Image (cartoon, rainbow, N blue to C red; front, side):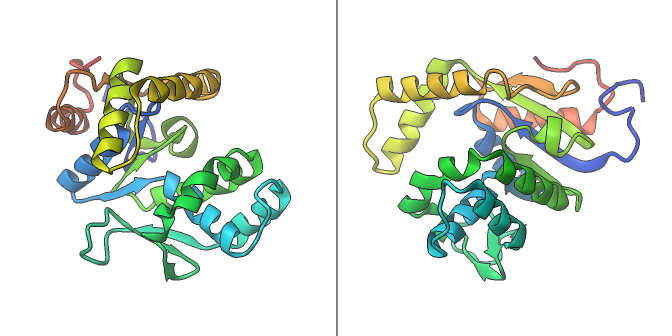
Amino acid sequence: MTDGRHARMNVIPAITIDGPAGSGKSTLGERLARALGWLYFDTGVMYRALTLAAIERAVALDDPVALEHLAEALVIDVRPPEVADGRQYTVCADGIDVTWSLRRSDVEQRISHVAAHPEVRRVMRARQRQIGLRGRVVMVGRDIGSVVMPDAALKIYLVASIDERARRRLQERIARGQPAELAAIRDDIARRDELDRHVMQPAHDAVQLSSEGCSPDELVDRVMHLFSHPTSSAVPS
């Protein structure tokens, strides 16, 4: 094989999807995993599981040492759906199914505080890699292709304009019955982009795809073609 992305030893049968907030990573990842019959792994659920445990065990969310110890002790596993209740995966923490508890509003409000600690991210990335090394997984999140799974068979970096991403987030919130205002959503995405600008970069061998103007099915087809033809020179941009 002549393509530098695949001329590597010990390539893991995994696909990583990185990209800025609202670019469509989760939609693509879930549909792609379903098409392949693989595990869909939204790596953010690990931070949610840790946040839930910290809340329930009264661990201070501004104490990085305490959170690091909790992260190291907590056994978090992500598996294919084990209950037919609409879930995309099953998440267990210390053997307890917490899949739906991860969507509690108090977890939603506090997860950013927990995930902000470098000590926590170090532990979580190691746990994410353990799951990724099982193979047959589509991993979605931050720094997955560049840091967590640099040996994945295919790495995607998904992009879209800020206006398109804001529009999608607005539609998502309206569909959930949540209050939403386009200008505020756009401002929040712009703020996150600025925070991520220096730390969230695509892996050197990632394929950059734009989700703008593409339906979810079209994006899945493009990624499936890349995965099935790793030496193809016709790489979408």
